[in-house]
Image: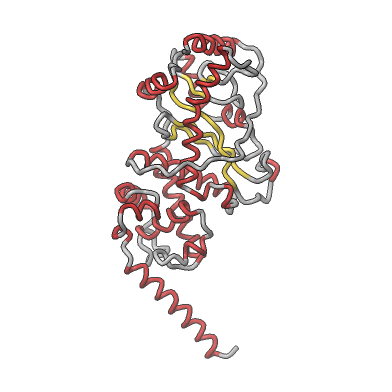
Length: 349
């Protein structure tokens, strides 16, 4: 090989890296206007600084030491917000760098955010304000939140593909989402593949164990709202099946549907804010990495809610899935749940 050509290529590579470093060094994201900052990174400047301070100790490694923690967080948020290929993020004038560098930075920042933010910001708590909101607006007492499943696209896995192929014939995670009246995510479980039914994901979740234990311990006046894909339980109210029009059962279903729509809006806002979760983006990450991405997006969603970052318009699922009704065995718990639902039905206007 001609040494002049070889050294010429090395010099060109060095020059490109030097240009990238210069562009990054000259750019301060905080000089962006507030609206532009949120549009680009989805967080407000205050929320960004909070996240940065929380994860800074974990991303100040000697790896990519020429890239500051600020720029590392900018890169990760841009990938999550746009759902773009890492190569297109790397050509952004704000974050100029090669695709492999973007990838390394992303997988330095995401584990740090998951480790520090998720446990702190995704917590299931019951509060009277939520109950009051649902009662005043929808006339259903005792509601502490709504539950639904969200399919989040992934790369076709190399093993156990059948566990991730959902009913719409694409590979996904089936994430359980529980939110309150303010669309704050209180529980999030993305560990199961798209072939799993909503009821299975719920029954295998720590949340179900917690709700059961709290019921046994005396909390008999708190419940979630779920569609017919979930089991009717004393702490989880679902619609009546095959309710005839004009009947009290149909009226209950109407109020129930309006109240439960909060979780559909929550999922729509989550996907609109972090577009990497959209099916249109064709999942580009393995199941394991997609779980991590999803967890971080859920925590960041709650941080946005806390810092009053305006919600984007929700993404509307034009192919809204029809829930698979679960078959239940008769039990004392189911009988108790039916009595609760019947009592609420009789009280509705």
